[in-house]
Length: 386
Image (cartoon, rainbow, N blue to C red; front, side, top):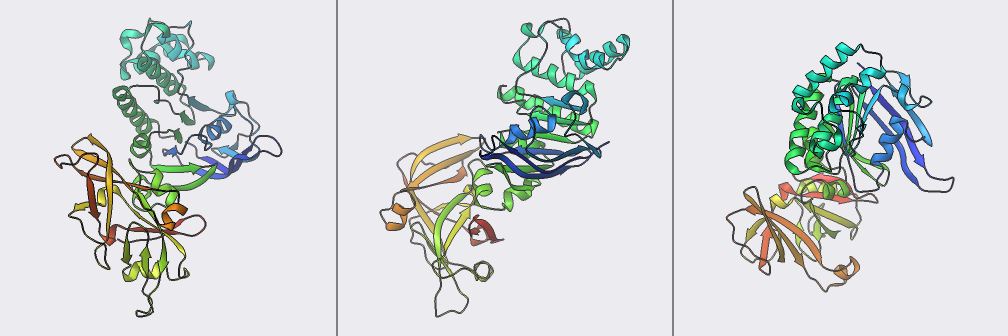
């Protein structure tokens, strides 16, 4: 058993180039799977390539089980790296590909054949053992690549978007196999993906990366319910959290009271939320966040001190899994709207039976217990209503 420890890792292309990854520190414990998500170009694959030894680091250290890896070639790092591409040897059969790593380690032929066939049975590949990679489907090739990684019995696993080229049903099957692998081998795993459902399903913890920097690392539920900043709030979720840009205003009549004002809605903040913004100056920027599932459709009403409301025109409707996701846009000609770049878009989630169609005008309300407030240079979360 081993722990993967990364400290201050960084990657810079050229002496004057930008950092693709900077000051990245992470410890992945025995038996833990950390899923890594973030927008394209944020440094996810660069991180895995440095850990695997396929790309030199510009700063920082990498250790596995207390052994420094920085100066070791890839073959000596005792890591299994599984890519989006299958990386099977085209001239070898499925059985020979499965056993290839064992052969390199000098495992006797009878043992490696037995172990390859056992892995094939687990992964549903038994009938394909005599075929070449070109004679099987993409999903079957990826299962074979997974089996080869399992048979290596490495000290840690690195997955670089291994399921992204597969269809939805095959992705689900392979996710189950990776979960089984995770439970069985109990070694550190890093799993890079662009698919949030994969990250939130597989990860013991999920790390959100943006522009080469860690935004938050937390268990999936905490990441969703208590995002560290507005970026994480908007990135995590399908669709992400609605963010309404506005400002703090204060009323002289009520000491300590505060109000959130924006082109979409105006509302008085309850004591707990008002206390969270007490250090912000009058007129300071403040962002209010609310998840789509926390918006409820109501008859047209004006927002007031106790009943927040937002209104918009339905631009699109998605129906899936017993629910409807409604996308809306609110046009506003105020100076605030023009300064922020024009119309404001937001989304709501409703029961599938709800009647709504593009072009409808709709009003929505929400509970202040479901509100998140963000402010400051990094738009960090100041408070959650609950």
